[in-house]
Length: 449
Image (cartoon, rainbow, N blue to C red; front, side, top):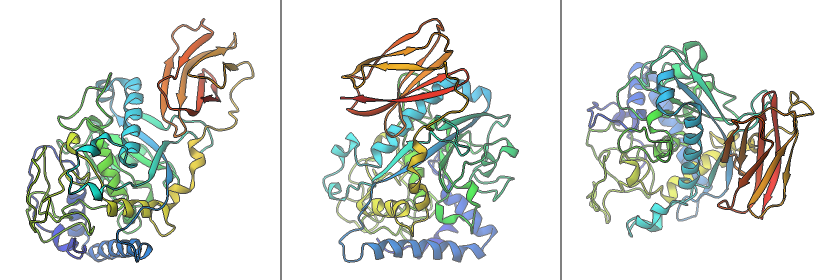
């Protein structure tokens, strides 16, 4: 595709809504910023151009931008909902299920592991990109204490606006990102990738995510991070059945994370519905297209230049339904990987803190009598957890190396001291068994052979 020089003109084009449900509000917010602060237009354009040029310089001499490094990024979710909304998605237990399924989708789609790749049109299959970014739930909080990688904040606010806030920058759901306005403060955004799960004031809006390159000129650091609709969060499954129609596959966050790592929409930054071929995304291997797609288009669909294959509407940076997404391209993957893995990348600092995925080595408020034993260890799949008689165990959580919960056991009978756990369906490797007691937490490793 052509370069991104048309971004400022394109963003100022009139907005026409194409559907009641909007995948993303990034373009509308960018337009609002430039209208209210036109002096930022040049800065945004310059930062974007410099970033693309830095990616190209790294890969100079190669035929395509290639992701070159596997990175791991600690994630924390801030669930900011009122009691009714929280109840709608199953309360705390429902949140835990959605987080687990959402993390699985992120790691699948950002590491070229989706089974959907088999249905990528033949003409686009050579362009299928692997971002090589792994996401793990943070298990060490900023104060050094243990965390499950998320917090639930029951707010009195019924919704938060993506386009018109009162706190901080006032952009990109800023009110949800401050405790003072009923939201949740970010954890150190230079170390944690903060994600807010909220209800938007704008009807049918799925998400918004300012890119890291906006920090300083447009938004303060503490506001960086995606915000997504709680009814487009996680993946449909047992105990997870309340979603906006068409958006139950966990791919709203896949899309918004693309913005976080500096991707534009595949057609560029023109507001959806404008229908112009004058803008594009600055990525060389995404076919030029005039506008957003919705639903599940029929392949092929002619694009602006009538290129072979037409529009790549199955790209994660278009607006189709979750079930119709298939891919990032090689060059999109290279841009995102550069953002997180290269010292010149705006998200580089996030990849330098893999230790935050580990549970703290010592938890001071766990009393000595709160001990448990695991046997056999190593195990072939089945093992038993035996808890001391005086321990007040409340929950058992087994997590994989990325901090994702693969087994959760809620304790209802406090008199039971032995618990059998089956990991036969899991991949071989090292897992962490976290026993959560009334007055603290203990974690031990188990090897699955």
